[in-house]
Length: 259
Ligand code: SF4
Ligand code: SF4
Image 1: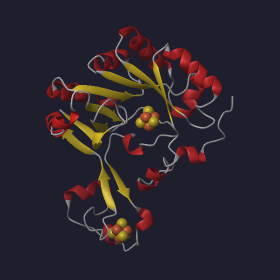
Image 2: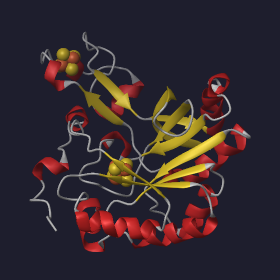
Image 3: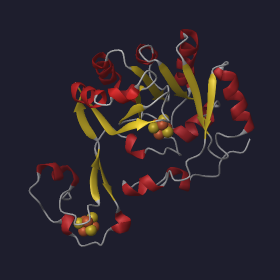
Image 4: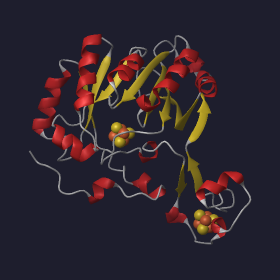
């Protein structure tokens, strides 16, 4: 089967132990206002244009005959400055596994593959198929934990390490800032705690939203002794939105809650 990805980052050191190759899957059911991967939100391909360097020559807006340009209404191949690209690539499980395995010699004993996104659980069937082809490689997943319990458990059980986000303990605030209830996430956290699968709980520190003392204390309690990581806020998160013609939600959000 095919999956939709938006990047493959080779030989990184931040997405798990050792040297790793990280694949970013497209599509996420959440809409966190601080999300720094807006190209991972939708499952569809998107146009990315560096508008700040555009001279408005109009060449890309003239009709062209390329089939791949048609869905976007702009020519992808004519910009003299190369300002236009498509974000999103449809790949078969075999193609992706082969691409990942080209890095195998660099992974050593500790390293391997990390599935990130977006939300990898949204393409769980595809990830299962890639895992079948990777064999005994050390695999990790970075997930919001938002999925039905069976989908969640069947996929995380195949991972050597799970990075799971707990962003907001309060369901009302979770709905407000991510667009969804945290109930399925907490249910899956229970499964994870019971499973004994190696796991790290991550919380992005968003000023006035997730970094409040009451939220951090509640998350610590929910994490039940699991290893916790607090991730610094990415102050540059808004920059990618412009490329995609989107507005950074946090820049227009109402005042954060200060509890
Ligand atoms: S071709 Fe390039 S420079 Fe010209 S309008 Fe299109 S994006 Fe801008
Ligand atoms: S769960 Fe992650 S990818 Fe999805 S919207 Fe939130 S920060 Fe972005």
